[in-house]
Image 1 (spheres, rainbow, N blue to C red):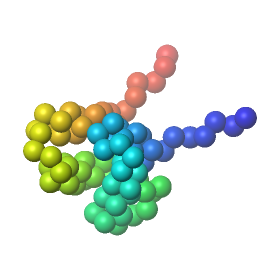
Image 2 (cartoon, rainbow, N blue to C red; image 1 turned 45 degrees about the horizontal axis):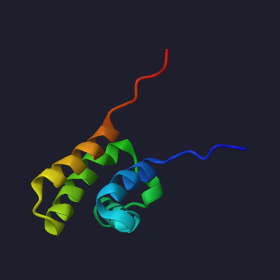
Image 3 (cartoon, rainbow, N blue to C red; image 1 turned 90 degrees about the vertical axis):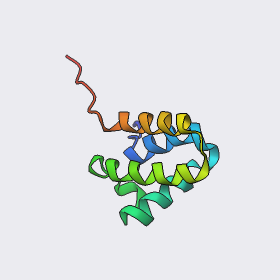
Image 4 (cartoon, rainbow, N blue to C red; image 1 turned 135 degrees about the horizontal axis):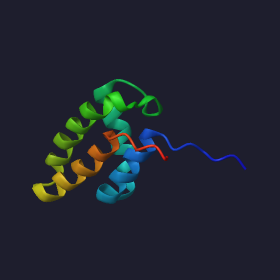
Length: 87
């Protein structure tokens, strides 16, 4: 059976799910569509910095808990770091 590739969008949603639960997919889709003007499936690593900035703003409107916001943003920023290749 062929493995399904996990997209960058899927990874962002997985991280977001920890903080927003079942609203994660819709939340991230809206951020991508409204602020990056593209479809979620087209999300690229080049988009992450701008997306993370928009997410920080949006989540800051949902909670005043700075520690949670920074933890969430930190987890998203880890997605911008290239994985080391296996030797």
